[in-house]
Image (cartoon, rainbow, N blue to C red):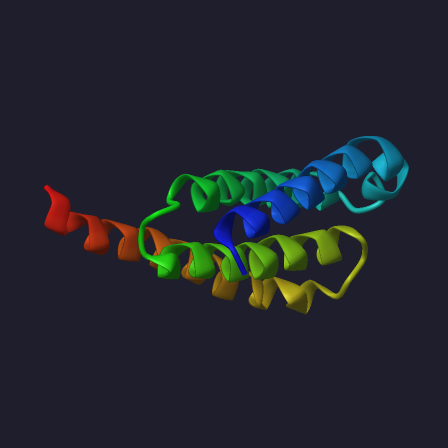
Length: 115
């Protein structure tokens, strides 16, 4: 899929989920002490990587792929836990985080030729 299409779709989802968490789920997120923080972290990381995906147009596709997959796993597990999924979902979250980190390392590796 085109990186800008991916960034656009994930960006729209991130904004919608951020707003939904802040307004539509406010009472539900209050039921689990960590839930609001998980929701905010998920939205922040998702939005951060949406911008990164859109910004590297013309470069290697691999960092963007890793960021897209990593964002979905990272944010998805945090959103799920905030909505009451079992805490063991938290064991999956670092897989997404590792993919996000790998995307940044790969971007740096590919850019080293330019400096």
